[in-house]
Amino acid sequence: VVINYFLPFLFVLLLNSTVIYRLCRRGMVELASSITVTLTLVCLVHLLCTLPFQCWWIYYEVPDQTGDCSWLKKKLTWRTITFTIRNINYMANFFLYSCSSKLFRDELKGLILLCLLPHEKYQSYHYRRQSLYDNMQQQNVSLIRLIMRRLSRSPDYPNGNVIVNPIGAAEHDNDPVTNL
Image (cartoon, rainbow, N blue to C red; front, top):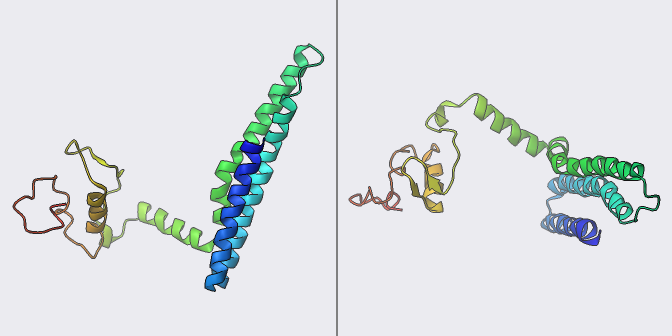
């Protein structure tokens, strides 16, 4: 119970308090108030969603006194219910951030709109998984190279085809970005 419940809660509470304290010291009053509400809600929802499962866990440690199966069935039913409530905590953060943070909602809207209605200045941008393994050339790609690929798709770096060359193919180029 201590390891699964109190330590994570205290850890989240301590880190959130540190974030709020540092924002208040920097004088970000408006941001701090919104973040304070969001982080406090995250801590409270974590506490409320994990408490029933921890109570069940303590109850589970009590040995069966009656010897019949009905007690075991009740235990398993309550375990399923409390386990589901505990898992709700994992998906609740998305809704907490959506409801309490205008910045989060604006960024989410922008991301959805960019996916559904691509803008003309991002027309060379292809939505695909970015990883450290380039499936097209069957080779490993460095993290710096992936970052440069991402930058090459932005309007500041219009030539997206230069950086996408496989490693070693640009040996004769003098461009230092291409030779990463």
